[in-house]
Length: 637
Image (cartoon, rainbow, N blue to C red; front, top):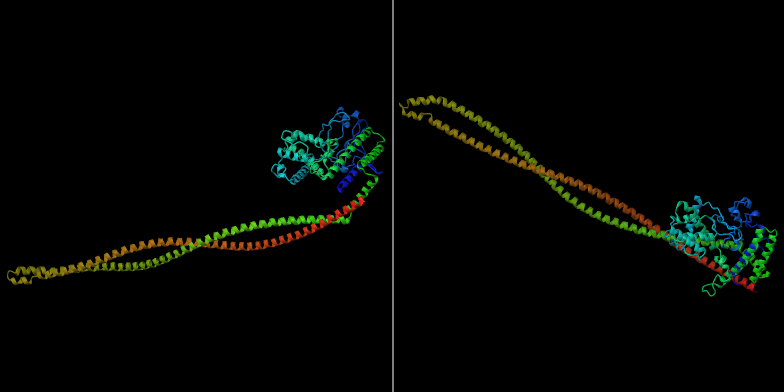
């Protein structure tokens, strides 16, 4: 028999000891009395109802004559025993479950002993409190997140809430099949009835109604739904923590033709099949014993304890015979268990196990740190790439701004040339202005000269007229005198004033010529003045146009200077930003290099620790296997 099979036999022997008591030790009924209900006419519960921690104490029942008729047969119902019996947690027929939450759903199972009544139970858990609901939701959430097909169960989600009918069906079906793989699948049509039926079979202690299972996400249903789910999760965790097949404790497994594994089935371990068959056969021996003890306990037999001890010894010997074990082998098993417990409680062994766990936890922490470092390095690389892209974009912007700056410089050079031309035009304009002023002064001078000349000519004409009048006044009587005497003396004609007058006319013609010349001179000067005025007007028009052009050029120069200043500021800002980014990138590169070095060092240390840990674990396993082989060799000898 292998070491695993021997371990299972030791566990099974402990089960029998806990149930019936062996080797002169007190049985369970001597230490703590049973909680089985007695008939109504002899109704008193055991004084040690607290034999299992956490079990709610039921109220003392009244006499049958004092109770309503619809409750008289309550105590005659078949006690509910959980179908799953594990090791030293084996329960007597009719005893309560070790859970505090096994008694509020109405059961339709009728008694095979007393009258048929349905048991009324009350919910013992505070399911209506927020603390219970929060804790239950967290436990259910944590359980399903650890499953491989989590998203499929939770309907492509990672959260239990909001709860939907499909999600509830998936979760409940997954948990029920974990407990019993032979249960039918749940559908939208049958899930309500199937859940209620299976919960009755599993002796669920909470309340369940069809309306709550239909409206699973409603506020009035949520407390019952989450209570059901957390109960199933706890049941599955308990089932997974205990070795053996749960189906061996179901009523169908007690039939002769039902075996745990069919003979010849591929992939079935012979040792496991042998252990399952032994447990199956021993359980079939225990059930008749419990069935025989129950009527005696119900009837209140005063010799029940003594008879029970005898039956327990008889059952133990039957199991020993069934397993082909003798008293010597039983004693050897006890010694083996004591030795194993001694090794198990050895401080050196505990220290080694603790060191092993600490190293394992340290290894997990190092692996987690390494993953975090790798993730950080990846994120840092992504950040560096993004920063490089930003730097490239900024450099492109700087190139564009440099091109704009060069264009602005060319525009400024053009504006400077225009300014030089404008200055030259302004100089010419000032020169023309000076010439114009000189011409104006000259014109004014000539106009004054013309006016003076006009005045002198007019005064000369007046003088001539006066002189002519003075001359003509004495000549008239002189000519009359000559005319009167010319007849007497013809030679007097030569003495007439007519020749003198003619000479005077000649002088007047000279005066007219002078006048004409003066007038021509005046007209020429007036024409020159007119031409100068025209030139002055043209100069003024040219000056006004030059001033307007100068104003426009000045505005353009000012605007371009402002744009150039803004451009210089932007270039300086970008240059400073680029310098800062360059310094920051250099610092980040140094940090990344340091992190990479730390990560490489951590990887190296992790690899060394893991190799040392693996070597030590391998040595420990080899030593343990060698000890086990030596031990079995000693047993075989």
